[in-house]
Amino acid sequence: MAEPVTVAIPVRNGGALLRDVLAAVRAQRVDHDVELLVADTHSTDGSAELARSFGATVLPVERFSHGGTRNFLVERAAGAHVAFLTQDAVPVDAHWLARLLAGFALADDVALVYGPHRARPGAPVAVARELYDWFTSIAPDGAPRLDRTTTPSGPDATTFFTSANGALARWAWERAPFRDVPYAEDQALALDMLQAGFAKVFAPEAAVIHSHDYTPLAQFRRSFDEWRSLHEVHGWVQPLDPARTLLALQSQVRADLRSVRAGELPPPVLARELARSVRHWTVRAAGAAAGSRADRLPAGVRRWCSLERRA
Image (tube, rainbow, N blue to C red; front, side, top):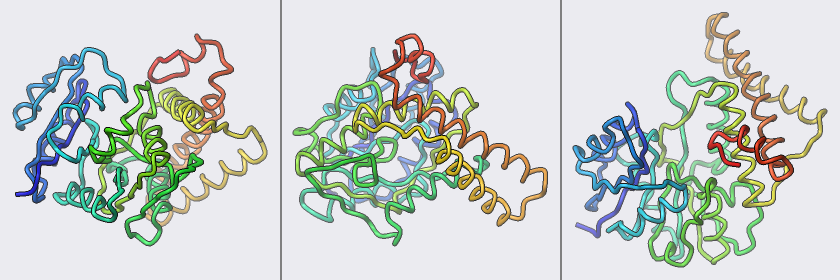
């Protein structure tokens, strides 16, 4: 048996999906002992007990932070490689972990490997298509993609990484750990790893089921946080061009409509998905414009706009 590998999951009130995540981890077929670590932050729904029933080591966390808590998990991990999931990201099959680990064999300097997210059954067409198009664009040929540059300029596929479905090599983390940041710890980690001279791999077959169907306000706040983090990590500011924004919205809605029609759905469902599409892309654009300019807003406004309630 090869050296152990660690699967690490930050948890707070993981809910019904946590059981699916833990079961999927335990079903992995891989030539390693699999250590399961859970960092639990004051769960009150039995998440810690559920994790222990799957053989996880549960580490209590007093104050959660996206970067700090993940550093804490790596510090406690026995594996030379640590794969991260979130409490609602379910590996699609029993080969997820093996496919992530295979990415490290592509070159000696690979520090990060990550895989795609796929939409949950019943997710809005706009959400499903956005995920599909983004991850397909990273590796259009379906083969693993290796990125290596010491002068990364993002945000783009070269600098992208996801800690909801990604793994790191401990030796690289020791030189470039997660920043102790409130958000976008994965984007910052990818940037730091690339600047340190390490490589990053996208493994298209190492997928997880992970998507959200937010209310309009929650989606605005999530988009606000995402684009705020892109500004903080990469300095990105979403252009304010009403005409181009409107054209982009129309293009996305048309693409969603084509996708719905291809599925030959009944008219009521088509109408529902069209409304969802218009809402999704409009709210996303508003959150992006505001979030990338968060530093210009009063602290109280930033707090209200943030899903994480961060001022």
